[in-house]
Length: 167
Image (cartoon, rainbow, N blue to C red; front, top):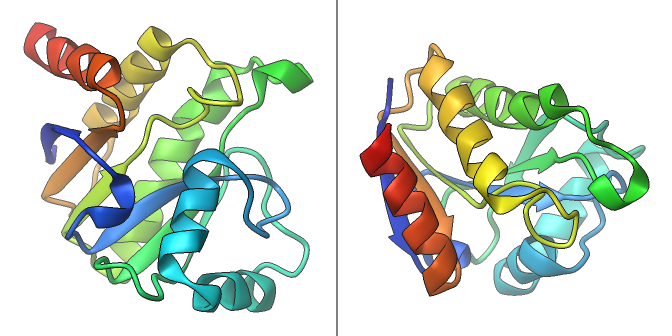
């Protein structure tokens, strides 16, 4: 199991092999984490998304692109379930973490930074999003050595840190 670390900050500033993007199905940028990654990484990410994912990605799946101008080497895009659209199947959320780590292994990435997938505008309850992340990462057979769970705001960072202590 990789070392799990809670980080308070901006996922786009993480100096890791790969950062994970909580993308939408269309893979053309958006709001929240997705928009921040596309803005910070520049147009190369969108160009790679268009080339690699002409029809987008299914919920629960993951794929990679260049990281453009970001300090990471790659962006692993994953599409989490959208509670507001009626997607409440937790196995889709677990799949996002599992598939992202599988993609990281394909890239031979040793360090990966994750946001809390689906816990923003997609409405997944934060406490369960954290529990799902810990469950999926803890069960993964992966070569990734370090996983950062990045909380953008202080309360989310504290929730992640408390969950790591309690596990």
